[in-house]
Length: 311
Image (cartoon, rainbow, N blue to C red; front, side, top):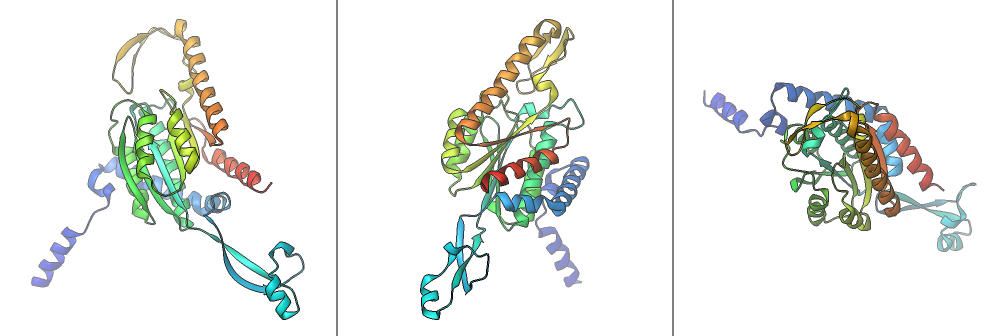
């Protein structure tokens, strides 16, 4: 009897996963679907592409072996060669001590999506894919949620639950205030002590975080993943219609027939400024859309980066 009671209390005391503790059934299903689909993509080759373009801090010495035709002559160990009277080369292995940090914008504008998926759901899938690929390569994964402040900071770990916690929080955390990526990203950088591959996932609605991106690029390997819905850059020429601001809740009448061209030009100019900024800072930027599969875009990015590294 006492054994059964102890087991019952032990079960009650076991920590639950964040998803089981906070999410209703429909969101639990989304978390599980994202975990299954993104891990499948990792298994199908994303992990290899990731490994080839995101490297650790350098190379460490492994061993000395006899020279073989085709070996790089720069790797010859001249001391051992002189002692043995036959050429030997040094072998090195890559240090995989890498920290990957995924920073996700969870402000109100990511609740929007005019096609098959909301931008927030797209952000959750991309976060999970990158995090599972990093874990597959034994890298530490950290995460943060950003709005007009630093909403959440998860220190880097090598744990599957870290990824599930991230997906849980991206999907379930209510939007808090307007987007202020400059402020929230500065807060994150003050907490991120070690150098990292920093993925910044956002739709970049509002002011572009110029100073924060400059600070991030000076220390970290930054990759900007820009989420884009077709309606972000091309409003329909219809109306008048009633629209609600996803971040402020302000409701206003909008006449697309009069204002669509101007709004489209303004949105495209903002995207152009972001492209110019990231290019000038040497930051990789990838555009991921809600109306297209994201995997081809990511694979193409990996290929471009790999070619650039091998030049």
